[in-house]
Length: 292
Image (cartoon, rainbow, N blue to C red; front, side, top):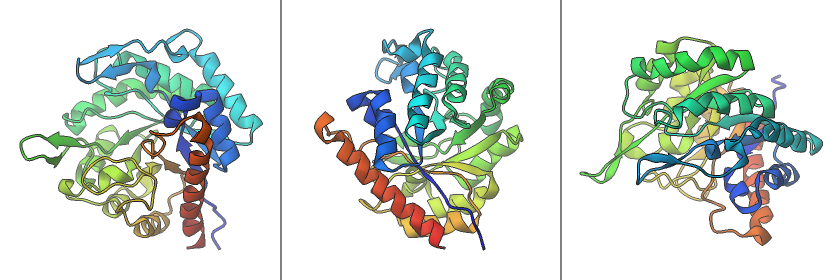
């Protein structure tokens, strides 16, 4: 009998916007998650309208960033949870961000995380994106951290719909993994991105295509048209089918929520209740997986 029991996690970025990272990690633990996903966007925030990076004034932009990562790790461990993964700032190729990616990897290691998600360039080929990952991998290995690519999407303004981007189809995601061909370079599947129908794939199809290369997840619900990042079971994704596919391939990572829009309208007074609800939903997903 399979003794593996899957564990749950969630990104802390949306919670930190309300109560700060320290309290966010504490909330994630007390709500019932097994781990936390380190949102590292504040290392270098990108202004999409102006096309440049701006200084957030956050501690992650200072020489104290590694001490801060260690502090969060201790808060988590003191409350019985670990950091399972992180998300590097993006877009990865932008001036002012690419040079910060190694800082993101180092912060991941200091927090205890084992995987750092680094977006590919949406509009680049697998071979071109491999150059970025080849540059980062030696340092990541020294830190004991794997790098994960993520399936992306573009917006077609002419036809008003989602369009192809790097890793958005099974063939292109596997082409990226093949181009790098390193055991420390893995896949993070964003379930919501995969379910936006105009791309022409599905989360289930992507899961089976990636197989054992799939080591991390971003789980959220969508209306299958937009990138809604809502809590599972609130919109249109069939999570029973998703969980069955994950079980079938022997997925052994975490069920990590990235439902960052769910908390967007909450205040400090109600933030923890929102995190508790997310933990409840994550546990439902985990129980479904563990019961199969």
